[in-house]
Length: 183
Image (cartoon, rainbow, N blue to C red):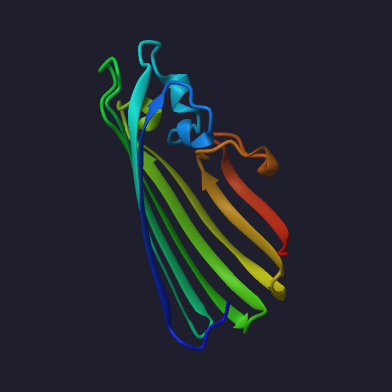
């Protein structure tokens, strides 16, 4: 939302666990950089479990119609049971800025995100995915009813998103819109 005063928010988080080869929730089935495949689909049959550690930090700042968001994620996968896989590390970065050209009604946005790491090649080489996008958000009724449109260039999708017709590894232009209702 539009704020006449400077507002800063900082956040951080840490998560870690031991994962078995086939977890039963999405958190237990990490996806790898570039292809978006599940790590468990790439591992040799001799790996039964491994350790997972993730750290995130983010900052959000806004003042007089201007906003800036920065997020950094670091993930490591290590201690594979058969020692055939080295420690894998992935990092991600999201930068987004926005400006209300019509206070509290129309916000223009720009975003860049990048994920780099060696999880997709099981430690053999680093891979990278990028997204660069721009768009707008029209706040029809504050945060309760909002319409957004964005156009992004994607270079390697690290997830499978049937709703957006995205497949792991896709690249090209993506135009999407969303009408959001809050209750």
